[in-house]
Length: 115
Picture 1 (cartoon, rainbow, N blue to C red):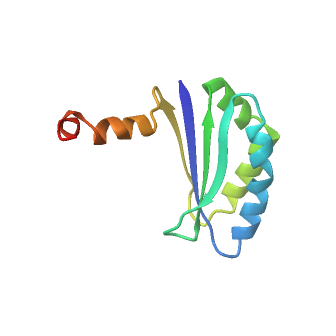
Picture 2: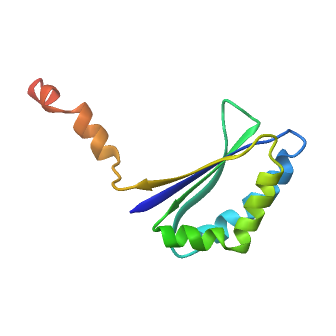
């Protein structure tokens, strides 16, 4: 079972670059850790004052190891600079699909009959 971690940080413009400078340097090293499938930092397009750290992990143990790491200390420091209480969620994903699901839905039985 895969875990998806989503951290939303609302930032005051004066702290934005500081928060990015705290988190951005750990993205690559975090992805190199065993069990990390993805680690990205995004700016929300509809809210320049919000940053989103998105991570995918192979197991709960891998997430736990990351939370105990020095890299996560930088995430905590960034959270301390937030202008509002950060939102973090740990989501367990039991299955994953891609474009094949879109094709299956879009080209379902009713569309196949018309071709």
